Length: 369
Image (cartoon, rainbow, N blue to C red; front, side):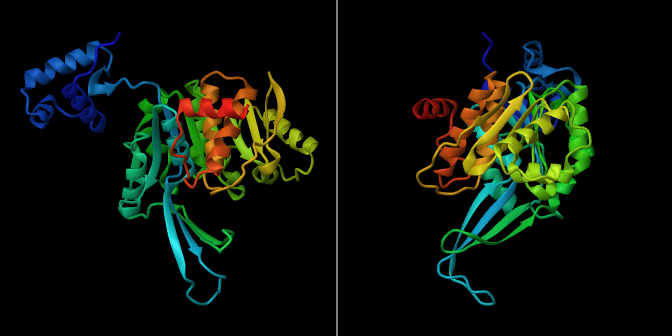
């Protein structure tokens, strides 16, 4: 049984995580201890494998790295009939959002060790996201740019909850470049899995796919919208998963999916590009999931009596796919877990349902089986 890390050792690890080049003297001054005491503790942490080599490279448990969007989701709910060209009485709700961030929170709540790689401003919006996210993921790898605004999605909804107009300011994610990611190359190379959303520039997605292939790491690609499908890399061979919806697949293949046969053919096309596992979701029609070993399966949807909010349901689906796959589950169980998590999120007013845990997901699956 591994020796328990003491409070002072944990403080040392936290300080080293923030600055791998921190000196023993600086650590001694921070903790109010002598330098020899710090040296002894670092020696012990190194012997136990918590620290690797020079520059105090930490031996982390294998982390899931989520790369992409972390933004503020604001919704303006108009109380009466919407009137253009004038002021409309409304109320506002605000949540932490972003595809990569939402997936990271779902996975964190499921007990996974997760780091978020993203870009933000140095503003109140980022402070809000940080407060909402820090319990479920590591945020040390979020690059902050004082001159930029944190990503935001602002929607205006009518009294029935239908979208009137939405504004997306995602410019900050153009700063998620290969050079930025290479600053954390050691963490990336030791990861359990890389999850990337298409808020990232195309060159970054291409870099991550190439990096994953060269380091024999699984990589999952999550499209965020049909217009961003052109950010997919030219070579998709070796990608572990793509989790897409019907509209995104139609856009990519420049074809319509009208029948189940069309749907299944679209999965085949993705597999034909060298992707190992594919999901195409189709709203109330459920999902089609497939790989070369287990074939292509249609998974019917799970009915939801009362939908509280559709925001985050797709990210909940993707998260459960990733979680179940990393747990070694077969396709049928992966798709089932994804459908359950999505349906429970649809019934929740939160972007990530607040009662999510590995135990709760298992209970939900048993109840709905």
